[in-house]
Image (tube, rainbow, N blue to C red; front, side):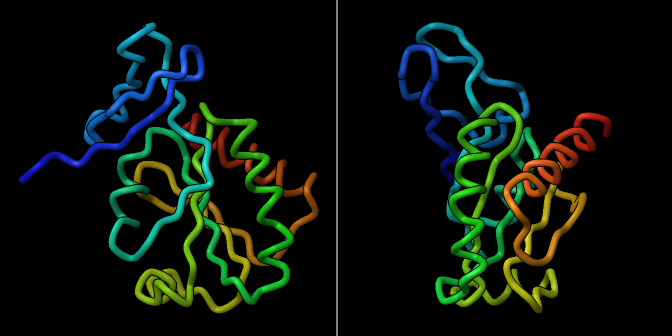
Amino acid sequence: MQEQTTTIECESCNKSNRVPLARLKDKPKCGECGALLPLGGGPITITDDNFDTVVSTSPVPVVVDFWAPWCGPCRMIGPVLEQIAGEKPFDVLVAKLNVDENPRTAARFQVRSIPMLVAFHDGEALDSQVGALPPASMRTWVDRVINRARAA
């Protein structure tokens, strides 16, 4: 069986680095320039099939946005989450899971109302938030998640 990998672009030299998922927690460095690779960012799309791998191998907290394309509040918070992910690529990974296309994971976390954000660290749920937050409150919530993960 082939080892699962991900490709991470170095922010210093723009070189693409293929990194085994099992090595993400080792804080990998760029093979070209030696700079630490950004292990967060996003948003990335996750599914029923890759959910457990993403949340258990990420060395940074993962904020999962349980959403659906028909949900107005989901579409409102999407750009805010994207901006937070871009501002904090070394601190948090933002992931989006479409509840209509991935009912197993949505049922597992008892998603009854969307948008619903769940933060994970080392595969365990840290915190959750149901409903759309104003941008400043969402930033505060994400910062609190990052700080809790660092303290753990």
